[in-house]
Length: 88
Image (cartoon, rainbow, N blue to C red; front, top):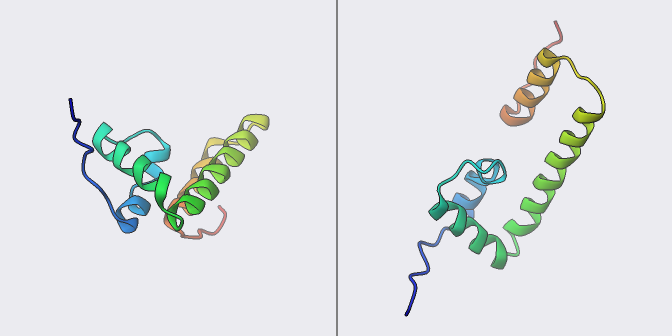
């Protein structure tokens, strides 16, 4: 019995879906395509490892200290949108 490998994706699509992939928010098909891509792509794999490590670091830090929700939201908004908002 032969299985269909599923669709393949390029680097742009893998990077576009990187955070939803890390958060487990993708369909099984896209998740599998990204997993296969990362297994063989020397360009995307290091970026994935860096982002995953960074998210784990932030998650560990926010668990150790009680961070007020508005501050946490502003930090994550700034990280994901690249915007800097003045305090207050």
